[in-house]
Image (spheres, helix red, strand yellow):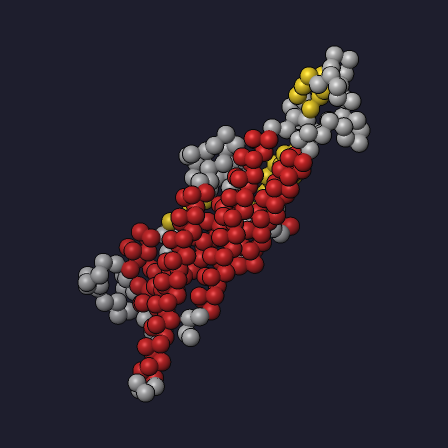
Length: 139
Length: 138
């Protein structure tokens, strides 16, 4: 692996973790949204981390470095039903379908994502320091 | 065996250490990047003991290799031929099958970078001593 690929690898992980944080922010923002554009409550989104080859020619090589990407998928869990008869979106029995977002879960995910992000920032910093120290040999 | 100003065993050893530490760093950075990828198995590069045995015990006499065919001729190649062994961590998998332990990787990252810097500084100071000799200490 050359140094450029190493930066690419840590960088791709930063991008994926950022995507995860964005999704969490979206979920938190939509946690109470009962009426989206198509009239249904907000459905929680989650990311799935996947690997892909840094170079097209490496696609078949199992040992070649693999970069990280995050794909957004919808959470299939059912909506919560809350009894709120006065709510404009309430059904005949007075129940409102609320988004399937659990704020506690999102907060926990958020901490995990930002820690992973930090770890990759540290890895990039260490790579940079190592290169700099190599360049200082002979000074 | 290469000789001359920069062909000494120390130089070759330090250069090899830098090389191996960089590869180890690549593995660690890769593990950190994949800490949330389902099914990913952490990778390690182990080379310390192999390098130690290639260098030999300090103070032990080595048989002199005076001809190319002698056993031990090209002892420097023993150092250069240490590439370490790649292992995959299979234990400690979470529910998603990922075996990366971020704490462990961060500790390894710090230790590996420190050892890399140590080798780089030692090479640097070897060059400085050479320079000192070339300038006749002036």
